[in-house]
Amino acid sequence: MEMEGPTVTLTDESGRSLTCFVELTLELNDQEYALLHPVDYPVEIFAWVDDEDGDQTLVGVEDEDLDRIFETAKAVLAEQNLKLKNTALSLTVEGELPEIEEEEVITLEIEDGTSIAPEDYQPLSTGFFHEDREYAIYTPLNPMLFVARMKDEQHPELLSPEEFREIQPIIEQQLEERLFDEME
Image (tube, rainbow, N blue to C red; front, top):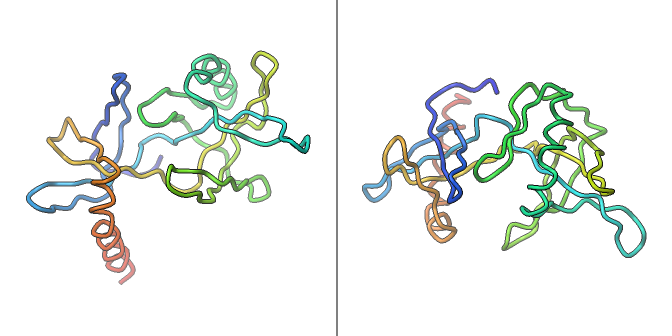
């Protein structure tokens, strides 16, 4: 990616890490929070499945299936000079993404646990097979952002959904002010 600035590393329970740029920091109740954006491009792998009408639909791949197809997906993306990484919170790819072709962008309705929101995706591989099942790899066009409590520079801590909902309005206000200042 072409962004620059300070980075921190998030680590999940499995010990996988994800390096992120610090987009914004703010202090609230004597605690520092940061809005983070992955350094590499997030990707998602979907399986093609037949629905009740016989049409094919993309569905997200579960973690246990992801482990089985990871090496195949990695090889498919390597053909495009992209390096697939099994990082914390999301799969990512390192390398230069192909230019976005508007006619190839798809919109999927993604459920986040509380609501369903449309999300636009750019295809990286629209069809590869593993054990008689077809898969596709996409990257979201909207940036993937995380909010973390900055315990210290080396150990940012992701917020629980409740904590995030509590400070979300403040973060949104800070982002609006930042965008307004940049436009002046």
